[in-house]
Image: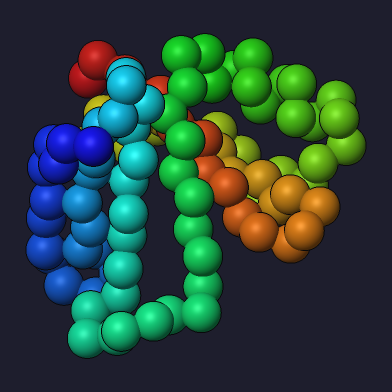
Length: 94
């Protein structure tokens, strides 16, 4: 696993990006907390629209509808049956 990037922009905006065999793992944390008790999983996908439609068709609860952000990501979030939130994102050209 190779660390690709990290950032610290205050509370809720600190994290690191790792790559392993072409898979990116983004780890986020709250400032000044050892454990948050709040798991977040971010998965990069190639086609966010397809993932969104597939997950909706499976009956998963959409928490955040697809939205494009200024940092070059288009994201959506679903709650999986175990209650965990999973954010899916794709990189977009601004």
